[in-house]
Image (cartoon, rainbow, N blue to C red; front, side, top):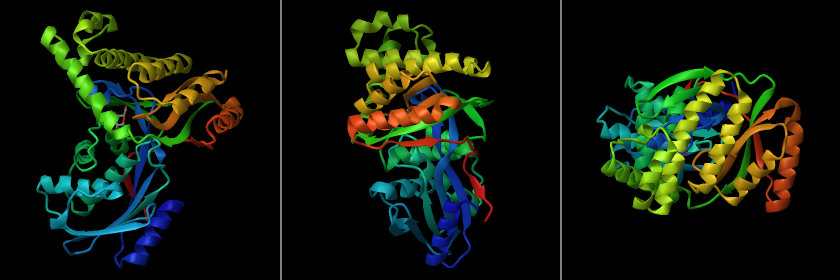
Amino acid sequence: MDIIAKKVKDEFSKRFSSEPKIYYSPGRINLIGEHVDYNDGFVMPAAIDKGVYYAIAPNNTDQLNFYSIDFNDSLSVKLTGVIKLDGWKNYVLSVVNEFLIRKVELKGFDCVFGGNIANGAGMSSSAAVEGGLAFGINELFNLNINKPDLATLCQQAEHNYPGVNCGIMDQFANMMGKKDHVILLDCMTLKYQYFPLMLEGFEIVLINTKVHHSLAASEYNKRRQECEEGLMILKQNSDIRSFRDVTDPDTLLAFKDKMDKEVYNRCLFVVAEILRTQKAATLLQKNDLEGFGKLMIETHEGLSKLYEVSCKELDFLVEQARLNENVLGTRMMGGGFGGCTINIVKSKGVDIFLNDITTAYQKKFQIDPDVYKVAIVDGTHRVDS
Ligand code: GLA
């Protein structure tokens, strides 16, 4: 059994008397398709070997007992007393609240969780926390909710208590991930395909800026509003019903004087990113990683200049990576304002690249960035104990 799974199980045994079930709930990477999941776009995420383990067992009371190993903090509430609190507590209680809203028959349970995924690193630790608990509750109480519906439940949980109006990407990847595959998810219909990720001679590495600017959640919600505003203007003045209907970014020029500059730039990014992701999917199927990498760089440019969700630390890492001939693609990943860059790098040059870039980053910001070589794993599942 994985060392963290064992730690979670042992901690459970110290605190509670019953035999728990153990679950693994992964974080995610996203190859391309950023900030378009809430704009009817396509995304290309995969579940990774950084995530959260849960140990859960029913306790035959009406009490919910949680212990977070990573925060060394516990929480006990009655099922009837589930309310919005703060920090990690909001993530677990919001999931329980979603089950309660759906009026399913829940009973009390004991729960210990902990993992190896950095908070605020853009690998979606929040979806990992939500997904593991939702999956566990679903199994323990035989609720028979399917995985895509659990993903939607978790997305709503994130909207509710934590108050981040996220799209579906993170929760979907968390539930539906498949070992050694990326998911091409159409966020308009929730139809998806798996592509094998053939990386012979290449590696995906994440570099964590180790900064997480506090604006992240409020700016995220603001971007979403700006996109809604832009789409409204498009709808009022044309037959366009969704950003998906715009198949050429130049179409937007006709609406430029009807929108604020920011709103226009957000729309321009979204339209281009949706088209780019479709193109990227074709290149990936042909295993054209070089072409794919170029599109990642375009995505970063757009996220930084038009969508304005990057920051100086992320931009620095991308600029540095672009100077290295072994790097095919590089960009910020996830919501932004800190967190990780994702890089596709030739295996033979990975170690030198990581050494050079971490040294340069340390020199510039006096921060030692973390680096992760991630493996692509199955979505949330039970672990044999
Ligand atoms: C966060 C959100 C996702 C998605 C990304 C940006 O991770 O949770 O829904 O919008 O940002 O692509």
